[in-house]
Structure formats: structure tokens, C-alpha cells
Length: 378
Ligand SMILES: Cc1cc2nc3c(=O)[nH]c(=O)nc-3n(C[C@H](O)[C@H](O)[C@H](O)COP(=O)(O)OP(=O)(O)OC[C@H]3O[C@@H](n4cnc5c(N)ncnc54)[C@H](O)[C@@H]3O)c2cc1C
Image (cartoon, rainbow, N blue to C red; front, top):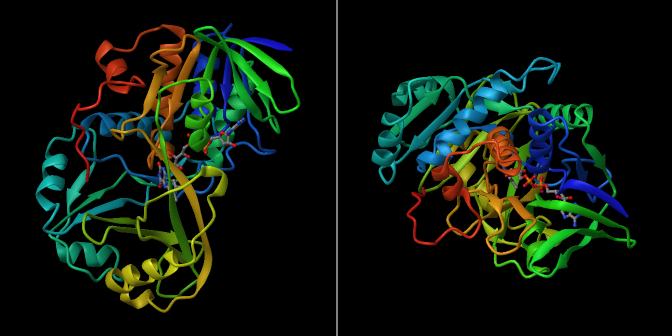
């Protein structure tokens, strides 16, 4: 039996960032992180599109992303040997259905966001292959592609240096419940790790682990597919990320000489059975023909899927379980976990250590918060 103050379950970006911040915020935090796989960050945190996009319809989510983006662009000395972001730029475009809403959100952005309005000609000049019609487009010069391997490695290295014990190939079978409190976890094989606080950062599996000890926190794991085309001469690797919002939602960016394409599909999934559905290739092909007709016939180099896990209102769950003492959630990172991980981990650490997060922020992210608070969605 092992004993620790804080046990983190899950070595994806949520767990790693939380561990890193704990190591930096408190020299005596005593943290153990367990990851069921042989490698850290090998599920959603490895299978995503690696896009740094900060603007969304929910001002709180945008604020969290903007703060994280600052970390990604200027990480602390020694965090990584390579830049964490390739600031090739990101274009957000919308048709008539969302143009006003997008423009409104851009207007309300704070002063440090570098954003410019793009005309249709400007958009075509930046990504000549993009041919569908848009009513509004904006270019965010300091956004683009995150080096997700470097980000995860930086967190893991820093956490280890700061005294966090990282245990891989270590799967939690169940949380330990003693009366009204969670007292740690039992691993497959029978070993128990007892903890004052158990942090659920298990991505798509977090909901199920919580349910196992009677938590009422509900999360929705969903599947999304990505495809990379075979290399094509017509693709310029310096093209920015392009995200068409609303009707015919779609995003793309250059990758390995080809183009990474996403049809923004969403379907419910059991994370244990998140395998690709071949028919989605057809959906991607149709949207590609609509937006990037020159690439409609491009061959497929890679096709895969991953899990995006959502809370009922789409905001992250960061905070203590509403009913069970000793249980803390860092989950429901949805489709923005890579872009937002830095701030998610910072907030989690401050709440865990009691070192100060505004009451309003804590309430907005509190697991089990009252439903009905309107969170804008696109
Ligand atoms: C197709 C796709 C595209 C995406 N694109 C982007 C993007 O462009 N930008 C962006 O910001 N975000 C993107 N995301 C979202 C982002 O990937 C996720 O929000 C993020 O990876 C979630 O991190 P996590 O740590 O919560 O989950 P995970 O990375 O899944 O980590 C959870 C970890 O918990 C471990 N675990 C589970 N159960 C147990 C157990 N019982 N015992 C021990 N360990 C356990 C798992 O093995 C796993 O390593 C995308 C996601 C997908 C699927």
C-alpha cells in the first residue's frame, strides 16, 4: 500500500498539467500520478488535431484559452527545447448562419489578441485551395499548431523534477470509498494507493470511475475522426489552420506534406471502444469536395479517431466533487484540452492547494454546478 497527499488518475494532458502546476506551486505537495498505459499522453492527448485556437462563443472558455496560449508561446525557461507553438496563423471563417456571432465575439476580444479581418480575396491568398463561400473571416496571427509531444514531455519532465511520482502501466480498477469520502484507489492487481485527495483526470474514463463510487457527475464521451491526405504538391506547408464554423463545419491544416482534414463529426462512444468508423471517410470526402475541391481526389495516408469528453454545459469540470469528500475532478476538456491545458492545470492546482481562485471562476467550473446557466455554443 502506498500513501500520498494527492493521487492523480490519468497521465493525459489534464493530469500532467495539474501535476506540473502542483509541483511548481508547492514544494511539499506529495503527488503520485498513475497512468494505465505504458506511455503517458497516448489517448486523446495524442490523437487530436493539435490546433491552438482561442476564440469561442463562451467568454470564459476564450479567457482560459487566451491565458493558456500565453503559456504556450512563452513557457518557463527549461520547459522545452523546441517552440510549443508553430504560429502559422489560424483563420476562423463563417457563413451567413454564424457571421454576426463570430464578428461579435471578435469585437469583444481583449487587447492582446492579434486578429485581423480577412476579405474573401485575402482568405484565398492565404489558402488558395479553399474555395467555398464565407460571409466573415478573421486571421489570428499568433495561433496555429501546438507541438503536443513537446508539451506533454515538458509537463512530465517538470513534474518529475518537482518531485511528482509518475507511475505508468498502472491501471486503477476502482476508487476507494469509505463512508462519504474517497480515500484513494485500488489498482488492477490489488495494490491500494491511499490519498487525502484523489484527482480524476482520466479523460473519457473519468465519468465511469466516478460513477463506480456513487458520484453524480455525468460526462459524455464522444468520438471524432481525423484524416491526413497523401502528400500533394498543391499543398503549401506554410498555409495556416483554417476552421469553417457553422454549416458544413470543417477544419484543415497542412500535415506531413498532405492535409489534415476534419468534418467535425460527433457521435457518442465508449472510450474503451473508440475505433474508426469507415463511413466517416465519405463524410470527410464530401466536405473536402465542398471546401477544397482541388484535394477531393487526394489519397488517404492516415485515418483515425479519438475521444472528446464533454460536461452537460460544455465548460470544463475543475473542482471538488459536490458530494464526495476527497474526490476532485479535472475532466470534460472536450475539444479544447490541448489549447487550454496550461490554464486548466493552473486552476486545478490553486483549488487543490487552496491558494486562490476567484469564487466566480470556481463556481463556473464546479462539477455538479446548477444546470441552466446559459453557455453560448456554436
Ligand atoms: C479528433 C480530436 C481532435 C482534437 N483536436 C483538438 C485540437 O485541435 N486542439 C485542442 O486543444 N484539443 C483538441 N482535442 C481535444 C483534446 O485532445 C482533449 O481535450 C484532451 O486530450 C483531453 O485530455 P485528457 O487528459 O482529459 O484525456 P486523455 O488524453 O484521454 O487522458 C486520460 C488518461 O487517463 C488514463 N486513464 C483512463 N482510465 C484510467 C485508469 N483506470 N487508470 C489509470 N489511468 C487511466 C488514460 O489512459 C489516458 O491516458 C481533440 C480531440 C480529438 C479526439
